[in-house]
Structure formats: C-alpha cells, structure tokens
Length: 103
Figure 1 (cartoon, rainbow, N blue to C red):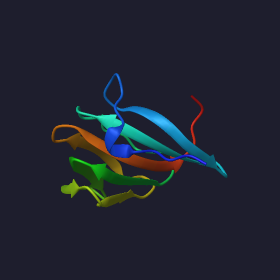
Figure 2 (cartoon, rainbow, N blue to C red):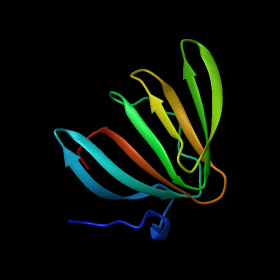
Figure 3 (spheres, rainbow, N blue to C red):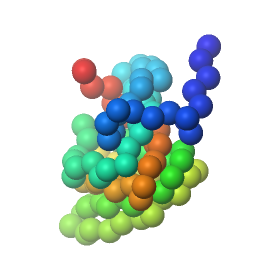
C-alpha cells in the first residue's frame, strides 16, 4: 500500500520522477518540473495527466502543429507517432503512463 501526495512532490531537477508502478510493461511515474521537456515521439502511446499546475502541450500530428493548455485534472493522450513537447507554466506535477523503458 502506498499513498503519494502529488502536490507535495518535488525533484532536484526538471522532469525528475518517482516510479509509482510498472504493470504488464506499462509504467506510471509522477514527474515534477518547472522547465520544458524536448520534442519527442514515444515508442507507443502515452497518457499525460496534469495533477498540479498548468502545462502547454505542443504537438505535431498528420502534418499539423497545435497546442493545448492543460490545467490540473486535464489529460493529454499521445497516440503512436504523435510528436509532442510539454511546457509548464511555473511548477507542475504530472502523471505519465506509458510503455516502460529500461532505466
């Protein structure tokens, strides 16, 4: 049993994370950040849920570029092949669920 108070979580660097669980090859990680990530395409699908703060998610799909402002409680789904980059507005805490990668 584990309780994680996401609003209290901080890391010593942008996009620092704690592993919550890995189930059937899918990882759930809580990230803290105050800096943008980098443009990337995941190896599979990704669920990105903002738990605290505001994040502007930029994305490219089917030759189109767009963005969505995500607030606490909002979820962004990146399907396979969707390039995206997250830009927090101040501090943010996000839950990322995706195919587990070896660290």
